[in-house]
Length: 490
View (tube, rainbow, N blue to C red):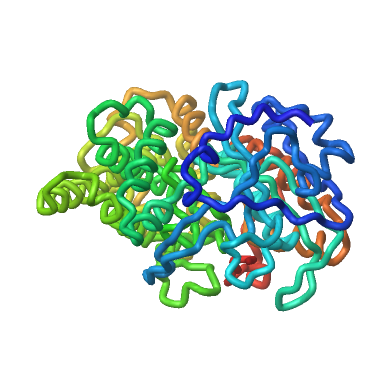
């Protein structure tokens, strides 16, 4: 089976990774192949969908040119530093350059033990694999930078967690798997040479337009800060809660990575958290910008030896760049909120208008996604206001805000129809509802039924389109369906 591998990371010094082969599994069975992504990567989708392809996607057979490695990295986990983490259950097969000219990693997640497994079995259960497939592909369709899912296979073997579960392997595709924690790994060891090598490599791979400034580390820091500020603003726009924003889960490329205890808001609540291990709400929805900036400060710390010859100057430069995150995020978030409210031109009071709205949503327990989708109809015709107001415990809360909103809309020369059409391109009708994710996982685990999974994947390929035949998948959960806790799935 042909993969046009060109494995640049595997050509870096040996201390960047461990060479390791995926563990063989008993009876691999293809659950889902992302044919469109396979073709984009220059792969033969029909071959991947065959029995031979399932062997490759499970790790039983290595395609020609693969150089399987597990990457070394460290990280802050819930604020506490761990000096060695690394790929404990993921193995990078190699890199391909797709038909679009973009270089991407192809990685097997759940492919067995590595030297970084720290006592774990290196395996994955079917639930987390299906969750990552659904959510990562939905994020891509929503326009949020993300790793992608190429395939999911079951292994025919059990994995042992709190209960016995079917095993599975996810084939993950990423711009790279370099994380903030990768830099922390070498900084913790005082390995300046490795830091410099990694900074130059990451800059040329992800931000080649910034290379050649004479200070690769500084150029990289600036680009990553901007990418993360924009990414988190987009998360907030679709109501996404990452759940475990550790520095080892913060990608240098600016992609969303590691869909563990992730979830989407139902009712708007900035303090909402889902992760079963986030006891203090460190990674709650509204805390995500602050944590992203904190993570950027940790990247800056790791890069300090490279930022300037003088330590005092290095600290000054690093501090200045990290502080720039706030302005970059606010600007990106304002763009997101203006688009969601249907505003075309920038005005000084727009952020106050948005903040007032979000406060009213929170106070009234309004579903975030449903509200903004229905607001599109109100932009087209004020007669739809009654339906929007009905979402509020106190309908007057919307009517009061809508009066200010309409005064703001009147200052722009945009037809109602054009405004509503633009709003429907940024306010999704469908998101991966938490209760739907849980239901499809239960169907797969208990009944070996993957039809709910297939249906949700298909609907989420077009999240901004009204799909009347699947309208039930857009509905918020009933009280007894609400998901309060999510799990990492490791």
